Length: 370
Image (cartoon, rainbow, N blue to C red; front, side, top):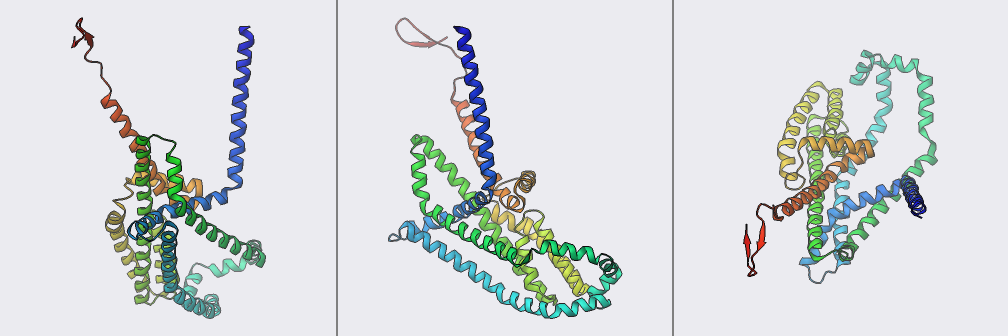
C-alpha cells in the first residue's frame, strides 16, 4: 500500500513539473508573439507614472475638478506643450529640408568633381573611386532595403498606431489609477498596504523625476547646440540640433554620439566652426555631468555609476535603445524595493529576542531572570 502511494505521489509530482514547464513555455511563446504590444504597454505605463502626480495635484487643488477632467486637462497641456516644442523646430526643419533638397544635386556634383569641403574629403580618402568600383553592389543593396512605397506606408501606419495606442493606454492608466490601486490593496492588511503604497510612491517619484529631468536636459542640450550652430554658420542647424537632443536621451553614449555628428558637420563647413563645436561640447558635457544631472536627478534616481553602466548594458542587450532609455528608472525602482526589503529584514532582526537571558517562573507566579 505504501509503495502504491509513493508511486502515485511520484506521478503527481512528475505531472505537476511537466505541467509547470509546459505552462512556462506557452507563456514565453505568448509573450514573444505580443512583444510589440507589451512594449507599448511598458512605454505607456512609464508615461502614466510620470503624469499621475500632476493629475493628482490638479484633482487635489481644484475642488470642482473630477478625476476624468483633471486627467483630460493634464494630457491636453502636455499635448499643447509638445506641439509648441515641435512647432519651434518644424519651421526650421521645413526650411532647411527644402534647402537641402535644392542643394543636394549641386553637392553631389561638387563631391564628384572634388570641389567643396565634402568633395575634398571624398577625394582625399578616394571614396568616389570606391563607389564607382562597387556601384553594382551598392545599387543592389539599396534596392533590397528600399522596400517600396507600400513598405513605407505600412511603417508609417504602424508608427501612428503605436503612438495612438500609447497615448490612449497612458490616459486610461492615469484615469483608472486610484481605482486599480484601491482594489489591489484590499488583498493586504492595513500595515502592509501602507508599506506597499509608500514604496510605490517612492518608485513613481523616481520614474517621474528621471523622465522629466532627462527630457529637460535634452531640451537644454538641443537649444544650446542650435544656438552655437547658428552662430558658427553651420548649415542645417535645426536638423543637427534635433538629432543631438534626441541622442542626448540615450544614457552614456547619446551625448557623445550627438556631439560627434555636430562636430563633423562643423568641420565640413569650416575648420573654425569645428573647433568651436569641440570646445562647446567639452564644456557643455562637463556642465551636464557635474551640474545639470546632479541638480535635476540626484533627488530622484540615486544610483552609483557602476550600477548605471551595468543596468544600461543589460537594458541594451534585452531591448535595444528602448532598454537603454528605461534601464536607469528600472534600476532605480529595483533599488528602492531591495532597500525596503533590507530595512524590513533589519527591523525584524532588531526586535527579535537574542536569547541571552533566560526567563524562569517563580512558584509565586512572578517572572525572574536567571
